[in-house]
Amino acid sequence: MPVPGRPAEPVAVRIAVDLLGGDGAPAVVVDGALRALAADPDLRLLLVGPGEVADEVIRALPRADRDRASVRPLRGAVSMADPPYRGVRSDTTVRGAALAVAEGAADALVSAGATGAIVTAAVLSLSRWPGIRRPALLATIPAIAGPVALLDVGGSVEARPITLAGHALLGAAYASIVHAVPRPRVGLLSIGHEPGKGDRARRTTDPMLADLKLGGDAHYVGLVEGYDVSSGERADVVVTDGFTGNILLKGIEGAYAMAGGPPPGRAAPRAAALLGVHGTVVICHGGATPDDLASGLALAANLHRNHTIPRIATALADLIEVTT
Image (cartoon, rainbow, N blue to C red; front, side, top):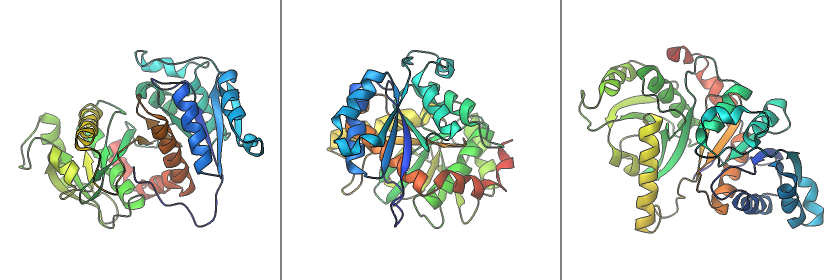
């Protein structure tokens, strides 16, 4: 996944890692954490989980680097089958990691656990931006013509027009700030380009987005289809609900696997950024590999180093009332 470039000067960043999040936890998370620490000498990790698991990470580090990892011992895990509210229990690792960011003990949170639980913990611990009804998960798709910001990919299944309008604002700002697109083109995912195509939510949202000020030089280009996400020719940002977006994302991942990988020189999406809360939160796929976890940690570190979340919030400050 393309990530913002690192600043010229090294900047230390502290990331709270959910050791029990994901299908392969804790082994996959431990391996991913070690790879991330080896790749980034300015990375510091707060390992949130059982003490014996965190100690495994610390013991595997060279003695000179062991102070780069600290521990917040918690033993409560949230399974993929648990309801989202399980994530707000005080004994869970995802809640502990979110609180670490809220308290200033960490600069960002990374988890491969259940998305609903992570989003719930983040919203309650970090709070939403004013006017944002539903935070959105944004994944960067390595399209042929350049990166495409796809959102929502699982933060919320709600498809109300007012929610989709909020996603458009978030995605346009992200494309401008992170992908450095000077005039982001925003499209609404549907089953055809022609006006009137799609379900009631899309038919209502289409004219709403046409009249919406998206900030800067971002502009709405109308309805787009699934193949436009992979080509990148029509839009730099594609807006949809989390149900449809998650299905599309996993379909694209499967297509990359069948084709032997994404376009040359472009990385497949391995993590998604949660937009709309006061803090940097990155969610990895539940079936993440160690490389996926390391990629998610790198994304979180770069988002923090480049002040991405507060920059997006500032960019939208005068526009966000549209989502109230």
